Every structure is written in structure tokens, then in C-alpha cells.
Image (cartoon, rainbow, N blue to C red):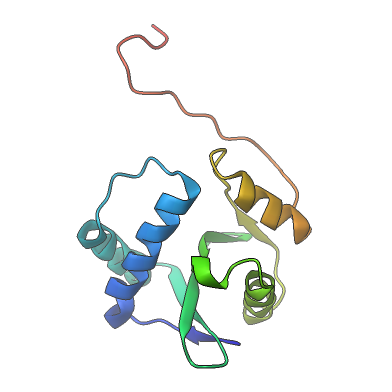
Length: 143
């Protein structure tokens, strides 16, 4: 397994995987793949770097998107495709990412709607640091 740096030309593929990630984690992000492609282009023009996770058969099985300007580095996306999960590949990919980032401290968010993701990160030794709360857009919410 290896990491391969993504380029702006790869944004459509990154966006497709991002859409799968959004669905898998139960996110309320309504963006479609075309909108996610444009957003990904903005990330890569800015302070973000992306890497594809490539297996030994040279197949792209996931990706990571990291804000390199954030201190500590902020892992915005980490995705392994469903057929490759529960086989240790996420653990190996994260170890490769840590090495790519010179083992610097990392932060990431896990949605409350994603208990499987939370369990994955905790199994890798990450610990909760804070809880971000959000209001629900409604006329019946706090006044």
C-alpha cells in the first residue's frame, strides 16, 4: 500500500469518494458531486493536500485530505472504500499518512452520526478533545 499525491486534475475522483464519505458518515452536507468537485478544487488551490490510498494492485481504495496550514494539521477527510474496510487497510493507510506528515500532531472531526468512524479513530489511539454543537435551522428552535 502507498500514498500518491493528488493533483487538481484528480478533483472529480476525489469528489466522488467525498460523496461516498458524506453518505457513509451520515453528514447533512447536501452537495452533489459537481459541487464537491468545485469545492475540492478550492481546497487544493489553498492550503490543503490530498493523497490517494493505493493498494498493492495499484487500485485507488481511498484518500485523505489534510489542511497543511492548520496547527496541528487538520485531517478534513479520511476515506477507505467500503469493500476495503475491516481488513486493516484503514489502519495501514493512516500509518502511511502519519509518516507522510512527519508524525506531527493531527486533529480531525467525527460526526455524532458516525459511531463506526469514532470507534475506528479511538482504536487508533485518538481521543476526544472537544464537542462542537450546532443549532438546527428551524423556526421552532431557541428564540
